[in-house]
Picture 1 (spheres, chains in turn green, red):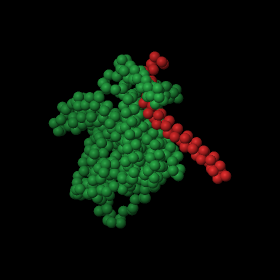
Picture 2 (cartoon, chains in turn green, yellow):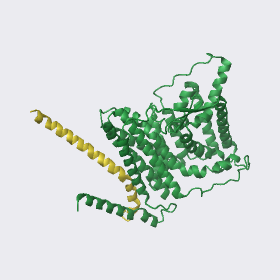
Picture 3 (tube, each protein chain N blue to C red):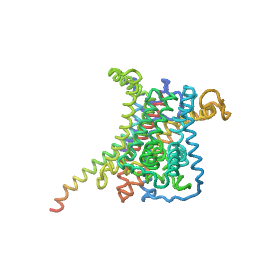
Picture 4 (cartoon, chains in turn purple, blue):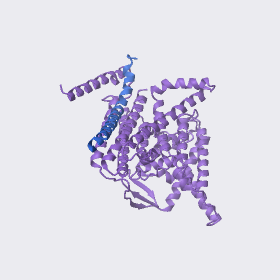
Amino acid sequence: MSRRCRIAAAAGGALLAAALLTPAGASAHGLVGRQDLPIPRWLFAWGAAVVLVASFVALGTLWAKPRLQAVRERRVAGLPRALEVVLGLLGIAAFAAVVYAGFAGTQTPTANLAPTAIYVVLWVGVPVLSLLFGDVFRAVNPWRAVARGVGWAAKRVAGRGGLPEPLPYPERLGRWPAALGLLAFAWVELVWAQRDDPSSLAVLALVYAAVQLLGMALYGVEPWTRRGDAFSAYFSLVARMSPLRWQRRGMWVRPVLGGVPSLSPVPGTVALLCVLIGTTSFDGLTQGTLWNDVAPDLQAFFGDLGLNQDRAIEAAFTVGMLVCVLGVAALYRLGVEGVRTVGAGRPARELAGAFVHSLVPIALAYAVAHYFSLLVYQGQAMAYLASDPLGEGSDLFGTASATIDYGVIGANGIWYVQVGALILGHVAGLVLAHDRALVLYGEARDATRSQLWMLAVMIGFTSLGLWLLSASAQA
Amino acid sequence: MIAHAGHWLVNLLYALPVVVVGGLLGWQVVKDRLAQRRERGAGPEAGG
């Protein structure tokens, strides 16, 4: 038998042994109930890795010069100024409705508009809309609309030149305020014991709005919105992948992903993306068995330090969330260190910034994969919550009796969407990183060699994502 | 632990693609360094 045949036979034997030992056996224990997949889940991870390697090879052979660094945009429609005002007012009205519902409505989370509007519509729905239609949040951003309205009125009263100029936005701050804001939001969503309490969410919404208004008052509406406002920064990152761009009162069309390479790697950008990927990973981790094994020990540790049960749980979850964010940052850093070994040995900080935009589609892929079922199922609740936002029996739009149809997509369908999102997101990341490497290294050979390390990182993120999803599906 | 191998082994299988690609990369780095050392070693001989 030749050496290759022996290797193939050994690999086949290992595959068979693994298949016999794992999901089929697991399902015999009754651990796999909701999904009925034709192949074990881990094979999807292997399949995803094969797709990534094939994409990498295809990029190396067929994508020999940069194509996404300076894309052409075409204006296809104009927008009236009045539309900006109307959308801004709609955003303010929606924000006011959520806050009012939080305070005045029933405190049952599923019957109150506030939790679903914040955790499902804002956190999951808006990124999906941003991918499809561009930066739609910018148009309806309530605190931006308020600040612009106040600024417009103040200029009318004080006259031109009567108002002091805002402070220059400090370069070293970069996207750090947004990164910290997203970390705080993730903490509220995943860690805080009162995360579902409508009145607590309403208070936090007001606090967040106040911080944004203060930031805009100090540094100007647009600079702060771009880099300081956590939600705007996140949604605008995702919108860079969209074929649509809204600017200068017009709708512009560009290639998909065409807006991502122009992302400026200011301080905090890597942190922002690591927070997005890391906190989503942690959300997946908490639904699996590994975390359920570790968490009680952590809680006991914090309990021994004198914290009560709620605080001990929060402390344990805080540690877990931070470890996940740092783990994602370490994985990315590992890839950057690998890239450094190729070419002229550029500084790690420069390379981390140069390739950070390739994490944007991965962050969205993680979000879609982890929250797709939440969006599809709990998103339907908006039909009755819009009619009865306070949960007190009103029927404003005649849809108060609507219910959630859990048959709209099955467990298998959700799994395929999750796998598809992860693969597409990581292939997009590879494309972006390869395109940038061609600019940095000039020679296609060096660019491809440097991207071998990014390929490893992408496969790492894909495997991690699928493992987390699989663990939560089996739990 | 062995009796429950099916439960924990599956977790390792997710990491296998990363291990394979990482291993190949590491092997490539070692090969590159060895080649560099060989070139350095061959330099004086070729010159002398």
